[in-house]
Length: 414
Image (cartoon, rainbow, N blue to C red; front, side, top):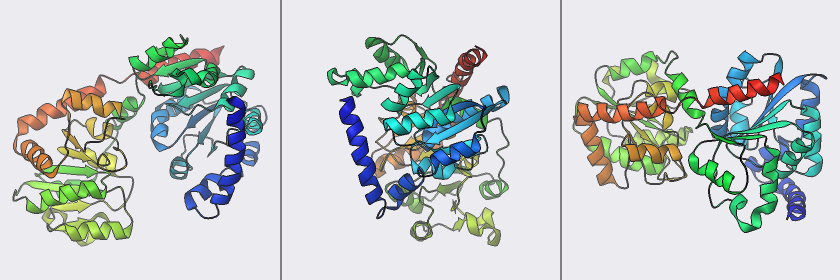
């Protein structure tokens, strides 16, 4: 199987170069990797002490971010190399100031894996959540480089736990230590012979808790909200917006206001969203030309504000669970509010936990959305109770970063 894996990679590399000629995303994937080795040579001076962190994409970056930022403070003599597999992660965070070198991870061929490890020569390698590349892990083990997995999560249907997965289980021996999110992941690893496992939880809890400690003031949201009850609809897709717009257009309440921060902020999508709303609506980009207090709906047609917008929310609706996949429920939860989501959330442990606790409600229809929104808009005690569940869920799960850093500190001191 290992030989077949390497053959498939070579074939995939060839075809990706062809597909890249016609597909923009694949083009970013291929072209972004062309300069990786030259970049590493130029930006890592000889003799540098390096810590390398790898993230599949943007979500994994947010899990690794608290660790990077603490490492920069505690171990400033080390250069941080941050790699991404996906263009959706790299393109958004390629200018992140917390890392010294940011690049794509080369395709996991034997030759490229060996060259990458040779050029970075990390004292420590950190993989976030998943991304198990056999050749890179094998090379790290051969070079006796300390390698850890953080915020890891494993499921029974993964190849590691199947009869045919022996060659993949072997790649896991490249890890010196596993920090996993839950007991199930720990038990699964134990069942195939790995005892170097600790349940640490998810570093994202530390990240979102830290958000509450920063300045989250946005004067334009304060001006818009005044003394109303505010529903923030975050990362919404059309499927979410269909239900939400129907509710908003038919609401007769006078003390309710709504903010949309849609997933798609391209002009065409924003225009369509605005046209469908019958209430007085203002775009963030045009806020200077309007009296915000008179508006009932504010559409955020820009990026970078959503986390701070949640600071002002009384209720949150998080999009994606009617479409491609649920977006982040932890960011609104950290500010303590009831949260509503669609039906497809089973791949997100934090959403499952919050639904079971009662801080998040999953709806499947327009009727269910109307019923839930009416309840939380009308009853202060319900908003308070559900909000406390959400906030307590965050505060009860912080600490993963501290546990991981304790281990890293000992490793780097050896």
